[in-house]
Image 1 (spheres, helix red, strand yellow):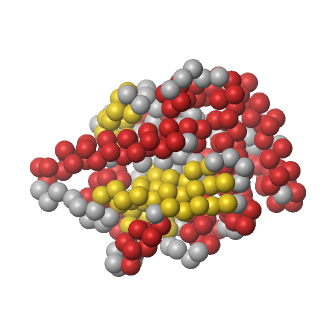
Image 2: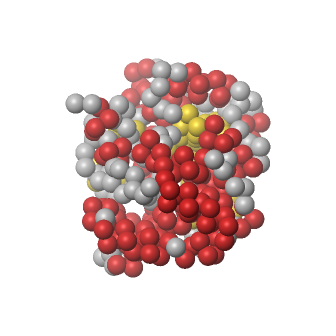
Length: 302
């Protein structure tokens, strides 16, 4: 069996035609965000009605994050947050940050780390907006390289990428022969390498952690990378708070690594569990922001 077949989210088909997405991009830029957001209501209604698998998974996750029975309005808010942040990618890539209220917390720690001449790994999640970090960094001339899969969202990535080719050119696809070398080079040049730590691909090795009280698989890659290259790693989350309000949170994660190979495995398991706990914390803080519409607890592999 092809190892990629083991990753449920990589098997999910991207819905919608390229033509429809190009129209949405044109419409959003032509008529502005307030008018464009009106189109999200029928879109969310359609997917809420005709995506039973995603609806079931959303309900399962929200029941844990909210700690109460999930109502139809909760499902709607989850879908709408996802649609709203996807729409806002257009404005972020187009550099229209003046449309938004963006609060940044902990950015001084990132600056002080980079001032030491070393690069930094930022470990995020499918929580809120990853595009906000990539676009805002480019707007402020901060060098960020994003390591991420875009195959299962190629239509969106291709359509929106034309807005800001520079941001797209800074993306590093994982799993390539030269991926590790490219990441190492960028870190050696004092750049930021941003990764998502809450999804594994079929070829990834994982570590099993407790997440909302249940066993779930998290990728080992970001931690193995930080340990191998001995560069500081920080957590970041770009949270959407409704309306035009976003916040980016940075927090220290790890900067000291075990010297002996025999202790590395225990360190990876402990550190991955800390990541899962911080992700759970932010999911409870902003429960409608986690956009993993696949069966996250379906199993693990090592």
